Amino acid sequence: MGQKLERQVVEGIRQCWKEMRAVEIVLKEARDEFEGEDPLKPVVREALEDTKGKVQELAEAMAWAIGGELPEPDEPLVDAVRELLERTRG
Image (cartoon, rainbow, N blue to C red; front, side):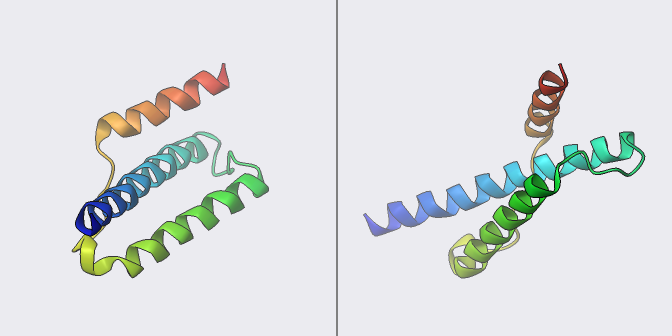
């Protein structure tokens, strides 16, 4: 039971990190489109940065189980975030 839970926690951290990075990548693209202006409101930017910090803290606490660097998102995940952004632009 303990090993299964450990694997689930590690996979959750990895997945959350990939999703956070995909959002960051797409937001950087949007910022570049807006000539350097952050497309997020300050409160949303703060929440995003806070969440990223918490995921990093979890990853550091579980480094022995994660075994290396956190993964970068694959292109299909980044594309999915791009599509989501496009739908919200409407």
